[in-house]
Amino acid sequence: MKRKRVGVLISGRGSNMAALMQAARDPHYPAEIVHVVSNRADAPGLATAAAAGLSTAVISHRDFASREAFDTALNDHLQQQALDLIACAGFMRIMTPALIRPWAGRMINIHPSLLPLYKGLHTHERALADGAKTHGCSVHLVSEELDGGPVIAQAAVPVKPGDTAETLAARVLVEEHKLYPVALALLATGAFRPPGKPS
Ligand code: GRF
Image: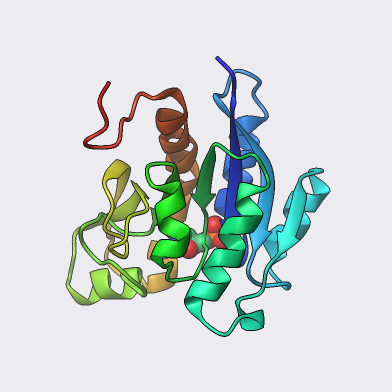
């Protein structure tokens, strides 16, 4: 099977992107990471990608007058890369239909909660404030509802006595790095089929 060409969108550290890159070093992995785009020029993940020989680009949202204008430019750029799939990895932007629709069923995101719990920001703080006993992460298709698309895979961790948002985030992040390559492979092989898509 031909490996799927994947573009990764980041805004910062890029540790999930690095986990995908690591998985894709295996020639049997069904996807290859071919391009990385950051909306922030100072994202540390850009150096990680460049050091691995990946092509990178910075498209700053600050250069555009509206969310739609930024998303249109980003989509135009992504369309030029001959990508099959997009993986958002700490891409801290609320996306509009201008970016979401062209990639429907082909764009995924990792979110640090057990969706549908704790959509949006500050997930670890909110889980602790609720006294949750279990927390975790999800990989889902990107849909027009924020953090609301169909879930592909999830991983759970225990919340331990004395946890802070930092200790809990670190425990979840270990699972994110394992989960994201698995979920991307499920989509790349067709093992996960978006709801409503005939087999
Ligand atoms: C991760 O926790 C991810 O789930 C969330 O933002 C964080 C990004 O971390 N969306 P990194 O940039 O992948 O290291």
